[in-house]
Image 1 (cartoon, one colour):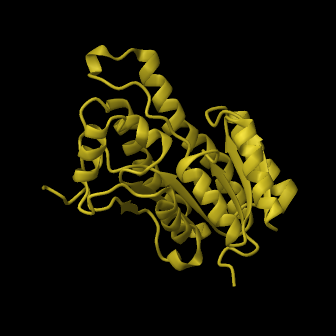
Image 2: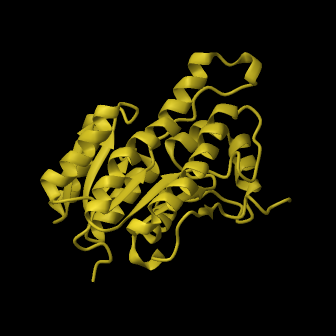
Length: 254
């Protein structure tokens, strides 16, 4: 039996990396998925692949920082599939990197808008839809950066992702009585286009691998498996958590 049978999920950042792997996994486990990202072709190809394999998927390209788009994603989940049970708010950018004195206000605002404000906008419309179904699972993709580790040059990214943990805790407290669970997923280094952008040379890649106790990066599917746990009834008593899936980077000192 598929563990997300009869569930409806929104997955943002679905055109690549962790979002792509999670969307495919949710669909394989029985969920109807509403796919969101900026890139129309990649989203359409993913939706076509899911539908061709007997799943249900709808691709909607847009900017997660646009409130109208956040509302449309929920409206389409309801009109096409009957409601909303799961939201994986995963879209993010690394943004400008470097010392804070060298960072422009525009660069800062872009990262906060994409990584944090978009999560607020998503939750604003996702939560009432889940309440109408008498429960649900809301998941944000945060990171160990700014939580267990300060990485030089990543102030905007760390601040935006740490903000998601605070948002997670408040929403979990506010919406627990409605049987809505809210959790943050904190991956370690993951072999995605963004991860390869950060570790863009063999030396940088070796450094990133060595930061982890497992001495490697995660695959997107490994992180997707943890997202599946949080989305499913297997995590029915898990809420308000900052769930580390970081290959031991938070405890490694060698």
